[in-house]
Amino acid sequence: MDKMNLQKTANEIRKHIVSSLHAAKCGHPGGSLSAADIITYLYYNEMNVDPANPDKMDRDRFVLSKGHVAPALYSALALKGFFPEEELLKLRKTGAMLQGHPDMKHTPGVDMSAGSLGQGVSVAVGMALSAKMSNEDYRVYTLLGDGEIQEGQVWEAAMFAGHRKLDNLVVIVDNNGLQIDGDIDNVCSPYPIADKFKAFNFHVITIDGHDFDAIDAAFNEARETKGMPTAIIAKTVKGKGVSFMENQASWHGAAPNDEQYEVAMADLEKVGEALCQK
Image (cartoon, rainbow, N blue to C red):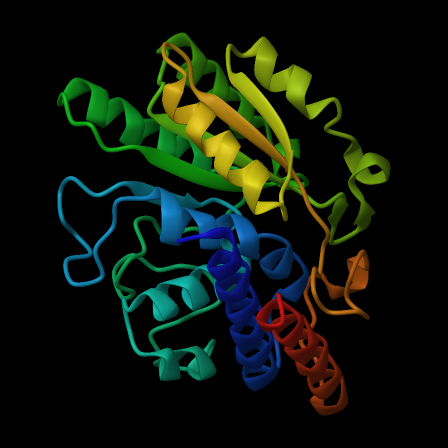
């Protein structure tokens, strides 16, 4: 998919994120919106996945370690055809397919149930090691939050991945600078993030996580990197695309009311119109 269509798809994913959270009346818009471009690129340009056969053995794997931003993953999966888009408006409803955190047993296309922060990267490392031991060529991707990497388990997993030279593993950090309690550097600073991953024998790439040219170059570089895992530090804007949510920690975990929903959708419609005029 070319850059223009990636931008349009990411904008549609953002619309679905806002709509599903508005319908649910709860959830996590800030991080879902900041991660939308990365997730769009993964599912539309990078990963070998098939909606008609979501469990095929040679598929690439994706672990959403920051599981609370499931609305972004669900929206991408629905648009890709893994399940009907109507399911998105049932988010967090009792008995519905899509719950607040990904559930691999009930949602096609979800490779790992997630929710407890810091654990997803360990699972991704295990998947990557399994591929190496079985001589399989699938790749493994995991998305973490920058607040999430305050968890010690992340660095135990990173140490193991670097030691085992898991060059089929890509760790992406959604570095939007905010977590539920405020600025990450005030709560418990993980900086310098790049240097920490380098210390654990990762190849590190730092990019603008909303620039599809930069995203494309980073994932291509990761594919070409041999003998070590890759960490992509994606600088992003929390709440990206919605004027009143951008760079606001208060939108980490709050759903828009009716009035806010109308403003948010109008913001995203303007983005879509501008893309169509290019």
